Image 1 (cartoon, rainbow, N blue to C red):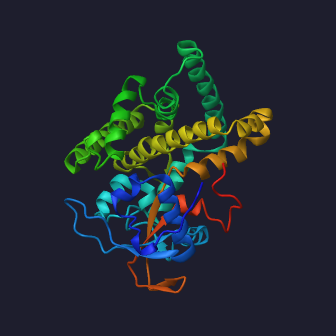
Image 2: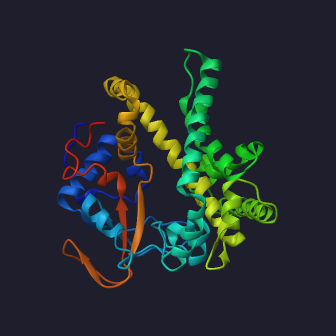
Amino acid sequence: MQLTPVNVDSIDLSDPEFWVAPREHRESAFWSLRREAPVKFFNEMPLANFPPGPGYYALTKHEDIWAVSRNPELWCSGQGSNITTLTPELNEFFGSMIAMDDPKHFRLRSIVSKGFTPKEITRVEEYVKSKARTLVDEVLEQHGDREFDFVEKLAAPFPLEIICDMMGIPRSDAKQILDWTNVILGAGDPDFGGTLENLMKVALEIFGYAQSLGEARLKKPTDDLTSIMMQAEVDGERMSSQEFGSFFILLVVAGNETTRNAISHGMLELTRRPDQRRTWFGDFEKHSRTAVEEIVRWSSPVIHFRRTATQDTELRGVKMPKGTKVVMWYNSGNRDEDLFEDPYRF
């Protein structure tokens, strides 16, 4: 990729037009920020129905992103993980654990972890492998060597069906879950009906669906993840149906979309780079761990998260008072030349 210097004062990460610019321009902009202004202030994009935000500092270096991520006492999540400042109720409604601080975060994480024991993960891993083979076989049977839409036939349904099966969601409801997911993730996108009113309508629908599912498993548990979490106790406390509803939104929305994007990017690059495909397939087990890590680095399916300063501090000499927002741009950190020898090579 040919990178060209960009005047950092001309960059506006909050401008939607920036994100539809050619990839070379976006990558050149982040490259310039890492070199010249790794901690830079930006105004927030105005959003209808929300008061104007105070702005944020963009962190584009891997080292700074890592440091902020590992210091929750100084950089908290409880005031929101999105750039826009939401009410505490909306933060927890949409973010669940990712918009919480201890001790609430620790309690909820302890309950959720009951469903992700080593034994359960091993069982799920074998199921995921089996499901992947089944879906691929079905596509090959339907299309043979003819062209087909990889995202529609594999990348999108695969994680969604896995999550539905894990949570005990009837397969007949999978299409409804996908539609809800697209509306929530497409907030602001007219192609997905992305008005605030429609977003809240869909959020309440999926929340109600989750609460009903959780309450049903509380009364009559099965062997699915929903039952495990609803029945789990920490210090004599169980997850409430409201907490489960928020976690459900996090899992089926964020977990579905990020996995779908990583799979899609991975297939695209393996198609573009047959040498890498041959290397991986030449010894699949040997290269699988590093291959998956590289796909996640390359695709950066989570572009950013926000943290908020809990006290006056500074970063790279930039003074930040308590309450300052910082936004960690993972897509930039994953292209940091100080850490990766050839970051633009897959």
